[in-house]
Image (cartoon, rainbow, N blue to C red; front, side, top):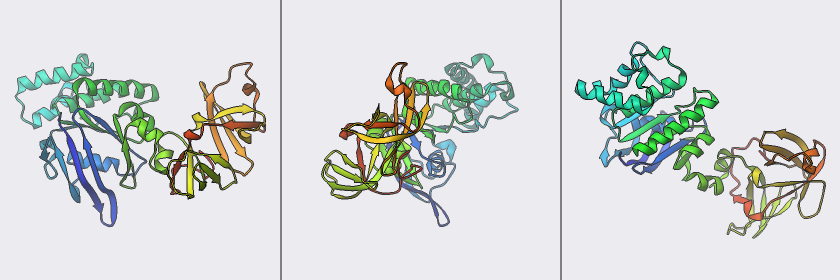
Length: 363
């Protein structure tokens, strides 16, 4: 395993900047997820690390060695592609051995390493099968074995779970994380799936339009997003726009006055982000909270969501544990009045820039 450093990495295609001065340090044995919407630059960044795309500017070092202009096979990396990229005419064992052949590893050693890699992913009994004889999950594990067999200093994964069904995604996700931790692999994982990133990564790098928006642990990004984009992309947030009238007091555009943390932001235009699960919903209109009418009730099994329209026209979505029979909240339906409450410290004040939320009033 090796430390990976990106120093002001940049990629231009004519006048279009795909990756804009990305700097990042991935420690030995750490799993870092590059996360963002389609076109944000995460896969371009990964392919520059792998050597498949040349950067316009910047530097890449792996294990202290500058590999910016080295070809892929000299970079000490192993990559798992979104499409698996298995050779259909080769057996499982031959696919796994391919990288070793390119590196001219002696045959006896290669055979031993292929067996070890297939045992790691629990596919030793399928070594002589062709890819078409395997399930999607098995093909993905072959791709993992092929990347692992070269003992990479840096392990690269480009949305490796996107072609799997939901149940299989969860299973393979757990397998990848267990393998990564057991082998101590320095890993960069690209995904657009926030749940995948939150559950897999030691740290997240959230990107948008080629620019890194925030780097931190899953908890740091969820609890303390740096801007509205991160607040809307990591998890879900209600967003109310308005102004900070004074320290600790926010007035929304709809005229709602709310207590907020006195966190040092100067009075003026601002946005407030509030997670749906931090909100308590009570039937009926009462003092001491925000009153509105239910626009939609959505049953999600363990949780139920209430989309509530406030008097000023703004909307707030609350997510609460599904009420049990006999709970008055169980009877609340569209059109009913409810009272919403939440701790002031659950609110996050942010600069009033563009966000990743579908509308101005909520989720």
